[in-house]
Length: 411
Image 1 (cartoon, rainbow, N blue to C red):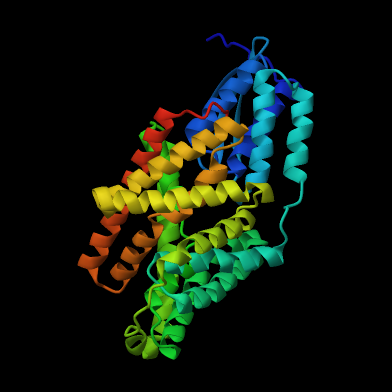
Image 2 (image 1 turned 60 degrees about the vertical axis):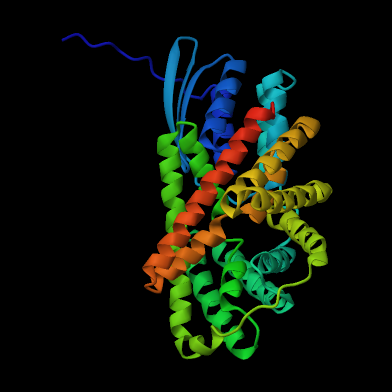
């Protein structure tokens, strides 16, 4: 049977193909959703004169690229990295300039290399501090008072310290969620045992709020809604495993503190007055600038997104009820983020991600998991189902906002 010889690939990968692969790895490092990932790389390959087809997964992607009658297929493994809004903005500007023809392949390659090699804007000590400052407002959002906010700030800082220390080694990074859950679960009960009028449930959820994968839950459902079933399912399973790791850690921590649990559960928080909402949102916005590695000049936009999300959800709850109200808040946040992108030509995630931290249904879902682990199955399943319903309402609001005002950017 005759065989057809396939031309051997060149010794060196053409620079246009190397650039596409490098951009793909960079997109994955910053957690770009599959549909935006594939669309951006398709536009870039077309601009570079390549025939390209792409298939994205959360931790890898396939690329089929052709040039001059030759075609190559690549499998690129690139695990997701930490959120870095500053580098994502720089990558957005580079991608848009390349697609618009204002930047050639060589210039884009140099820019991407410089972006990825640049050190983080904020140091480790400030990041640990802002983990605490970013967790404290969540205590107020969950109905806690000033005691819960102070104690949550301490717990959040400990979680941030642990995330940085364990995250430096690949083998220990997977232990961040169960170890943080154990620490917070134990200390929340101990603090509620020691101080009256303190809720251990509020301390637990607020102390871990920065680690709760609410954004991944929304992104996975967004990928499923846009037909990227494999990527969406994989990311959804990863989100579920994170919830399970946190829940296991909390259950273990509470088990270690079982002798203090009965008395600790008797504490009831004293909510703060309404005038504290805006200062608390400003504190959260400032902390998110550091946690998500944004630029300082983004603070007014991030604060506006947090205010829009919070009051949009509150007004939506009055009009439609708490579950549907989140959808209205997400719609307002999505509109604001897409308008921000049109005005500044920067990624909408700069304002969308901090706003989602105010809207995120992960706290509710985490409570449901905690109930299930404590064998309160009916209450736990009901709470978890409500969290899923809230996530769907949130996703619907974001999709409607995207249909109403499209961002017109590559990422």
